[in-house]
Length: 237
Length: 303
Image (tube, rainbow over all chains, first blue to last red; front, side, top):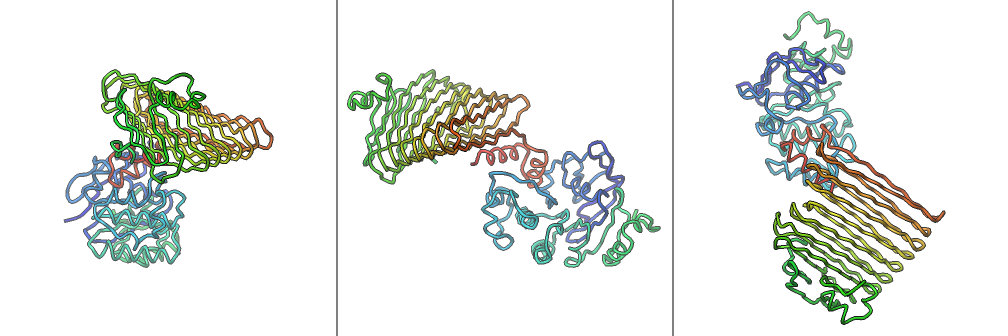
């Protein structure tokens, strides 16, 4: 059974059409990547899948395990197993990360293996560095026992050592346990560590390419930029 | 924390009746009218003979926190407490003070006038917890006199406010004395008036005043906070409001009054709202909208 299927999804944000008919699907345990230039709609797709209310779905549907979740609130989607790793998570003053993890956890996680114990005692995302934010996101995702994780730019703000550590955790704690993963990335650094089975390219609110060889896509983008994708004679749809 | 231990309190009063006075080593605890008769020196601090209230005279350090609990348990009770707490020279004491209503709908009135005197070098950590019913009227009026080099840490926490709360706190800091006053109030369908002032009356006195107010469900909150530097001291005022309900109002009036060119006074004040981003973030972690708001509020009040 397909884990998540999106049919002709159209999304508006503050009245502006961002997604203009996205078709996409992912199977249980599959790793996929989504690349695209700035403002192509990658984060909008992530937010729409997570059910963020300000992302208004004007057409199409989202099916999770064959259930239509298009109108479901975010917290209900989390209960089903859909979890979003935020690109820039906001600070929540006065709430310690350890307390927050205890509050949201569906399963008990040994956070010390993911996080510096000092970070657990700090207020959630308050004055966290870019890398600390990403590791805190990862610890929350593990605690939520997901079936599908969408990582929005997990590789931004991470140095190569931390990126390798994050990739190792994603591989061992999620992928090996059958969790499906969508890696949204601008530059594609994380892909060399996690080697997606399918790589998608989004341009101007549509997925224009679905390719098994991620290296081929990265080479093309590196050489020609996303301009080449816009002119591709073999679009995904 | 203190709420759970009210039955073992050193002073416990319900309505107008004193239920228990458990003497504590090195401390004299009496009903205020009895103290007025027994210790003539207390008359300098009581304007007239009190009808009710407690007198606590801490003479020695014991390490055991002092606890008091005053409760309204019957309908339409009007308490009028006059309290006096004296901490002797160089004595350190921690006090957990609880005032509450046993039920939500008692239409009670709780008025408390307190004078707290810290003698030279004394240290007082004073935690006050209030929890009231939706129709109560509450009017605490406290004055702290901080002797030379004494230290006060006063935390007032009110997470279940009454229908109307008038809270007045004045602190006089003598030479080298320091104080930190932290007031946190979760305003739910309530009218609140807060008046706080720290008077830096001695050289090198220091005062920090922190205020955290949450406006929920049509609350009307007005808070006037000031630090007055009469001598070369240091003061900082930090007032923050979090407005949640569209019909609630928070009115902050922070004031710094400097009467000495060598004094240093600073302040920060802001009133904000919960951002959509914060709400969305917490909801994407499985919390409902209401749970997310409550978590943000509890974090805001946690200082």
